[in-house]
Image (cartoon, rainbow, N blue to C red):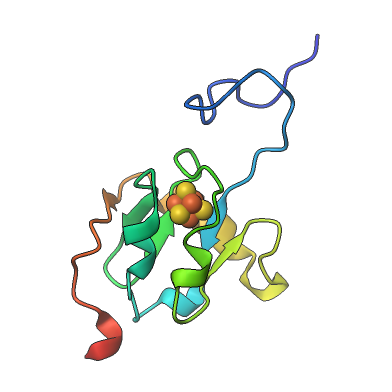
Length: 113
Ligand code: SF4
């Protein structure tokens, strides 16, 4: 029997075809900056907010890539493009998004402090 990962994963666009499932990832450059320009362009409210940085919920991200160019500190990557030294952030996004609030994009920008 052939089982492809999680058939409920990203069920908003799941079409039963064996695509490689991707997400985008916030990395360490966001820490203590939280510019949040990315939140405004995300079409699916995939960003989650923690006290000093954002993460992306991989179950919500549709991999449109719109947020990458919006980040002034280049903190966002497709999961396949994350630099080796930032790879721990792939799991960090996945685990920390679970209990975090949806980012509204209206929190103070920490880099301005
Ligand atoms: S890649 Fe698109 S869907 Fe995913 S977090 Fe960025 S803007 Fe949102």
